[in-house]
Image (tube, rainbow, N blue to C red):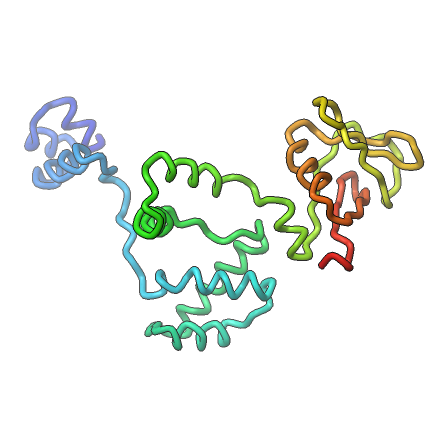
Length: 227
């Protein structure tokens, strides 16, 4: 039987300890932690020497588009005061690169970010909630384009036997309507409603964009001259 379940059933530290097969001091500690709003079954995350330098590690990985080596990163953070081993740095760089490849976004650390918002910018609880909502959203497609990366959009109603190649998008105007994907004046697909906002952001940006159909998906890139 679980410790807290046993305590809720008996209301006694000692009786709960007998049911759960543990010491009654452990039962009391679990109950006290629960009373503080802490899950006693979760292990506390210990801080590591590298923690304060992870934002720099991620910045170097992002700026190099995941090409930077662990040795170069280690030299950088050692110059900033890091006293850990190069093995620790290699693990951190590997994790940052894996995160970059998965979504091209840095790891969001609420504890560090919220402390910065409240200390440096005097943000109140409502502003913090707005910021948390903002940073939890998918990456802005314009940021991806300006970094020289293509933006891929899943399409709906893709016509059968359509080959890959350039396509055109029809701006819906002010009225909420479907964004059509066409080739030679014929509609061949449509942008799903869930992706309308992201696609409209790109269309309304004024950037020189190219759109191609690749494996049934829309791939948008920024013209080289705009990079």
